[in-house]
Length: 138
Image (cartoon, rainbow, N blue to C red):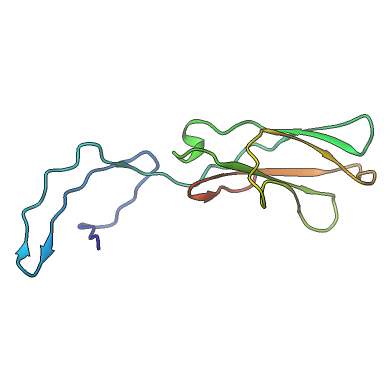
């Protein structure tokens, strides 16, 4: 069990947390240890990504989709484990393209449709780290 003393703690990504340990058992309470020397850095889910760039192929069946790899603070402080790409054909709901069921680590994808696609297609992307999925791009 861990106890946090003090008031409200508003931790931000990258904040360093240092701690001391006190052992409590039937014999009583031990003196507090010295503060740890390295600390723990706060991490969170990835940031919202920029929308993907979509280029329609010469035939209306193929779409070349690419996006920028998340770096720096946008990763949430943890390695990006994969991306999830969805598309919206203009009617209905968002549909999965790649990355939700199986991990997809690349930053580009070629989607080939089985029938001609509508004139307007919408795509969105999000990233996942060890803390979960970030929000989809706008």
